[in-house]
Image 1 (cartoon, rainbow, N blue to C red):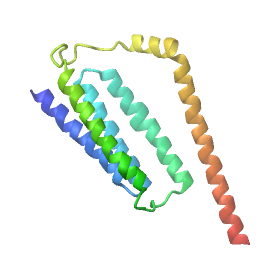
Image 2 (image 1 turned 120 degrees about the horizontal axis):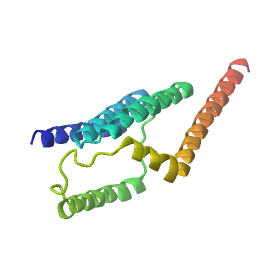
Image 3 (image 1 turned 45 degrees about the vertical axis):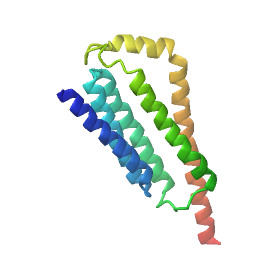
Length: 173
């Protein structure tokens, strides 16, 4: 019962962090909210008995990826976001889509929930088996992801260099 309470509490923290991430107007505050989401997901994985996945969640996502996000935010010198009222199409299609998604998720949880089929911690993942899958069967998606991250870094550098060149030319001219 205690595990279920902790799971629910950290699930609520995760959802609250995700909502806060969307509502923040400053990019650094959004990045910090994403760290809260990643940390609470790591605790969720710990409660499910997946210690390896929880450690990877903290090391890779909350550590390395968030450092990359903050580096790109600082490199681009992103300020406070300008607020707009949004498009009418987004309101007309977005709200029904979100409601439909919530109904589908609730229906799936209520009709296909097999919570009693495995005890908490019974499905442990061997790190050697995970590494075998990651570096043999899923090597191509792993490498494509690393190339996409490299392209994103290069794009941030190019955008930052271009904006600094424009600012310099405005000051000089």
